[in-house]
Amino acid sequence: MSGGHGAVEGSNKKVALLISVLALFLALGETLAKSAQTDAISANVEASNLWAFFQARTIRSTVLKTAVEQAALEAPGAAPEAVKKQVEDWQKTIARYDSEPATGEGRKELAARAKTAEEKRELALARYHHFEVGSAAFQIGIVLASAQVITGITALAVTGGLLGVAGIGMLAVGLFAPHALHLI
Image 1 (cartoon, rainbow, N blue to C red):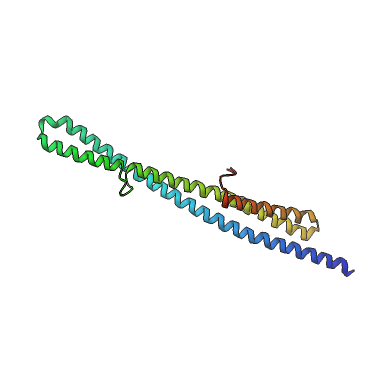
Image 2 (tube, rainbow, N blue to C red):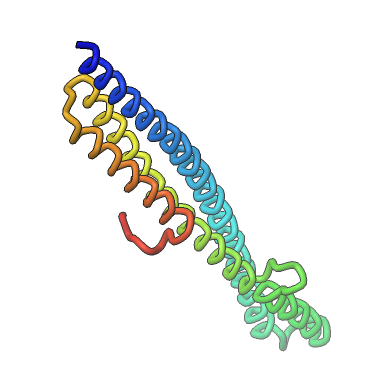
């Protein structure tokens, strides 16, 4: 009589251990997902700010180009040297707006920085999606393993364990090769 009961208790302990391990990896997956999501949001804000700055530089440059053209058209009636000096100053400013390697705030540099931020965002989002799928696998595995305790159907615990392995695989893909699988 006690042999059968002891076997059930031993089985339940194994399933409880499986559930604990799945819960541990679930916590890890959720932490990694939240971190990746935060990184994606930060990179998205950075990219948006850089593109806004790029647009501002473009608008300022266009205004100055228009002023140069206007001054050139009105030059015959104005003091030629003063107009020429102003046009040269504006052209230098236009060139600085287009490329300013020293500060990284020229349009060319801003565009490069914004594209880098977009790449960071895309990497973080790819990681996030893999971590979320891994977390879902752990959650489903926990539910199935828990159901095995109630029903005694061993296949539920085995399936829960396999989902745990799949979840670990998704965490690994998210960490080491986030662009290897395209989920979304």
